[in-house]
Image: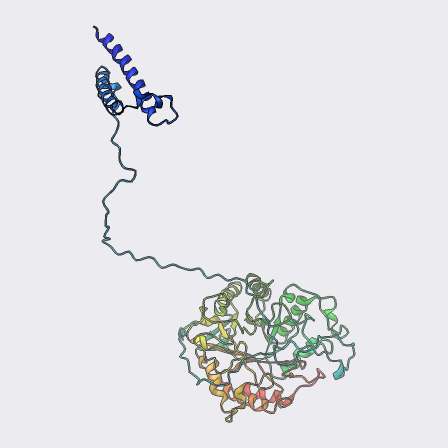
Length: 526
């Protein structure tokens, strides 16, 4: 028999065996199969022996069949492994300790929501434009009071004053004095000459009138001359975004101010600045109210972002950079409440002031930046003795401003009993207890930084009986410390809690206040 015939026979037998075996396997698993009733298929011998015989025969036939196949046709089945092999568990021992890099968390400055707190002082009524009479009576004087009324929290139990040690970078004594304005050893220089700012505040641009007050009674040039004749050499002018936007104005007697006819807010400010320059008077601009209505805790409020605030500061800086009498920009009036110093979060007034200050100096490197304090701070601040809004510079000792000292003026605000009755005004040692409080709040920086009191004042005896002794004590303290820069609040008589340099007739001056301020200017030596 040939190999081909044998191969064919094996193939037929294999087919028969596998088919028949399949039928037998089905018998035991199909209960309904017709083979179940056949005794032949149900015998125990058949069930046990026949499958064994067939298995041996089938195996022999399979081996014979595979023996005649070419090697390339034989498929070797790979060994089967369990679904999850048991690999040995490895223990990894690191040879080097990895130290993670510090994570740098970016500081986000969302636009905060500022809550305006009503103050305990009397809220002034809205400004009305009086009838245009050359000799106004007191009843025709508008009663709007844009003076910042201060809400301060006094602590009943006073914590002993801790004198902070200033850690500000020492100011080099060999800084060359150049043109414009510069600070050296706490003294302001203008074109290399010492300058003491004997200033006064003239408000109105930040109110609903959008222009300085008093023009309903007088000519603006005459008032500027009267300021100069009274001993002032500088004016702090508050403004707000409406000024920058050149909004329409009210409260002017155009028969006395004919050259202001048809002008808007910023146009009138141009005229004021030009006249100050003509009469040899310095000026500082003060961003006073972001909504032209109330003093905010932070420089931003809903609807007025930090970028808008800085843009307004830069716009005003560039507008007046050509004037040699432009001393500087007060970045924000009276930070308080939520405002902090050196905390690194969205309430950090120090960080915001640094950003704004750098932008202003980039716009005009000849001028100075004026930066006010805050109210309270979570660290480096003795909050047990109440601070005025913008009056707390204690944190400067721990977290100094990152701005050039030769371009920086610190400008705290401080007031007396006419504005708010602080607990320390009732001290049995009053007013002799005041110098230590002022020293802790801002005075310790004298000689290290330039200081200019941005606002101070009162009715000087026409209100609280304690206010006169408060103002006298402050002048003596400033003289002794050599703090010779300040701006009295205010020229306007319509400041509800302080009154003004002018009497209510907008013509005559409070001579007792003038005498005090002239003594201060005469006796203060830097």
